Length: 146
Image (tube, rainbow, N blue to C red):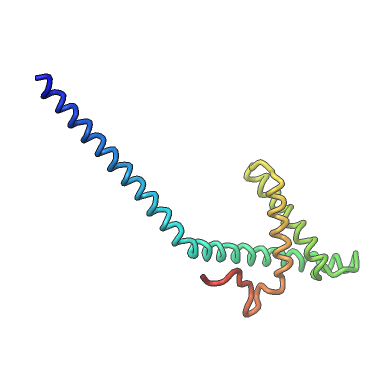
C-alpha cells in the first residue's frame, strides 16, 4: 500500500506543477499581448492628446482674449501700452495662467509644487505665442498625422 500512495502523491505533484506552469505561461502571454496592443495604440493615444491640447489651448485663448479686451483700454489710457502686443501679451498671459493655476491648486487642495507653477507658466506662454494662429485656416496643427 505504501507504493500506491506514493504514486498518487507523485502524480498530484506532477499535475500541480503542470497547472502552475500553464497558469504562468498564460499570464506571460497576456502581458505580452497587452504590451503589444499598447504599443500599437500609441498613434491613437497621441492623436487624442493632441485634440485635448488643442481644446484646452483654444478655450484658454477665448478666456484670455476676453480678459485682454476688457483690460486693454485701461492699460492703454493709464500706462500707454498695448497689452495685445507680444512682450506684454506673453508676460500677462503667463501671469494669468499662474494665478488661475494656483487658484485651481487651492480649490482642489493639491500640494503645491514648482512643477505646477512651471507648467502653468508654459501654458500661458504657449497661449500668448500661438495667439495669432488659433483661428487661421491652417491654425494650430500640433504634430502630424501618424
